[in-house]
Structure formats: structure tokens, C-alpha cells
Image (cartoon, rainbow, N blue to C red; front, side, top):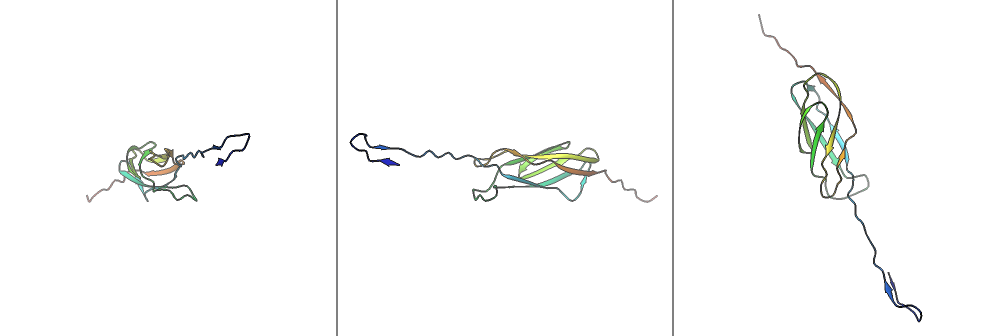
Length: 121
């Protein structure tokens, strides 16, 4: 924006300040069909830009949180539950150059007990 000046005031110009903030991605967790105690279960995580926004794709690491011993990878979380039961868990997204760190909504994981198989007599 510029002002050309007049007999009372000198010409002046002002620039616009533009602040660009990181967006918070939407996190969706897709659990496996069955989770068995003592076995590694892989959870697929979808991290998407917020609705009505077309920025760069989401990248980064996710970490599985809850009673499982966990590991992390690019948008896949895996964990091994040590006991059967129903557990509340979350997934944490590490963020990247365009997106903030965030945590998924809590979700329930039903863990079946390990199956024991017996063979003949």
C-alpha cells in the first residue's frame, strides 16, 4: 500500500506482513483385524492435511502409545501387547516441515489371548 503524499505529508509506503503457520494434520488409525497378545500388531496411520486445505503431503514418523511395547516408522506403528484385554491407545505424529506434532484421538484395542494348539495324543 502506498501513499503519494501531499502538501502536508511526505509519501509513504507500507508492506504487508504475512505469517504462515504449520497446519495440524488429521490423524486416522486403522488397526489390524486381530490383535493377539505377544504378537506384533501393525497399525496403519493416515495423516492428512486439514479439510479444505491443499498443502504438501504429510510425512514424518508416528509412534504407537499405550500398554504395548512399540516401534515407529513412516506412518505405520507397530506394537506387541503382552497381555489380553481391552486397552486405550493413541498414536503420536512427529510433525514435519509443514505440519505440527499431534496425537490421535484415543482408540480401543481388543487383544485376544494367545491361542494354544494341541496335537494328537
